[in-house]
Image 1 (cartoon, rainbow, N blue to C red):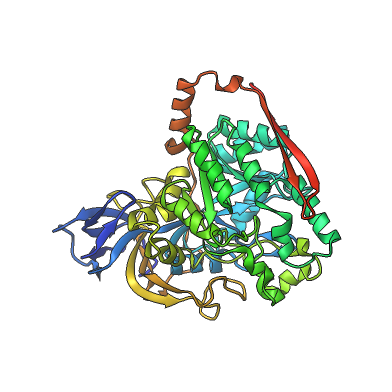
Image 2 (image 1 turned 30 degrees about the vertical axis):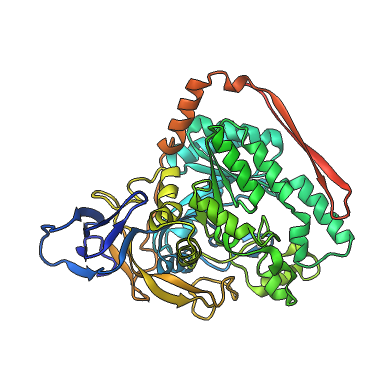
Length: 509
């Protein structure tokens, strides 16, 4: 019964929360879609009635950054598409977008097809795929067009970090952005300067800094701040991901004030934890917090980033879920650059953001829906099929108890890994019921969903939320592309010396 798309469900007596309004209403679901929203509904018999009195009824979460069954830095992430999507559903997330990460010399299409073959038999919820662009040339551009036209991809991720493996040179990045604009795709940018990170890492190791604290020392805020400032100049709708610092957030705020079509995505870890974790006396504890960009030492950073989520400077918060075991992290026991980057969080994202965001006074329930679901749906052209509770939308919903609490622990998690970043955190806000495409998949902690019952969700190009703004901006500023400029930055080392400089040049087509 739980896997039947034709199941009839009436959610009765709750408050329906969308990103712009909260209203008392019942919700009737049939054939996998929301059929009616309102009071005194006329519905056919035989529906399962869920009592939501005193509870909130919200769109299911959309996690835009997960890395399931992914090989990275000589290790494979601990969750496959079954365990990862199971954990997502248990935590209140009903759709994930995972990253396809091609090797430097491999085909984008072949890498995509390989991930589809791994995911389709296992996933429990709807999923889509971003595809990484790790090199550039005519073949890559042609494959991007093929993925967009024939395979339901509408987003590509480019890296300015990971020199010699994932990083694109400045000219390659610029060409990839132009291609994204031409084909109507969303450009996702991991904004760290790979050259300066490589120099900083070498110098830290030369100084005898080999532990996890080397991550923060070798990747100071300036590496991301200036890189994101450069990206703010490109004339392509962009989603800057893994925003980790106050200064990087300020760069996005300034770009938005100038009317640029730039959206920021942070992760739960960056919005909750500080970089002091890297100095923990237990190496394993410190190493289990390694991700890129790193957590920041300034203890006020998480509170600041949560505030930026609350005021719409940052649009979305993802889990960036890529768990590794402590044993896998021991690859970098004597060299922090070899610790695989990634943390777990797909199961805890919703509850942690509710606790620190809503209970913490940084946002209301409507803004919570925006940053965990609706904005992601808008950016990736899912809205209003997903991210909103209205007739005709996919029946991806939660019955959320804002007063019930749970204490996070690695001993009770469904997600992979042997460590939990939020161990012992007592969270208000628990999904009592999770419904995915009209299927009752979780109820009071019980999981009722068959492996492989989820579906790949093809994404359409030219999302209005991004491209309408860009088209209007170009009408107002028709000579935007005639601008030519160079940005040069200098970064100092841990000893105060100059690590190097980097420049960005843009010319008209």
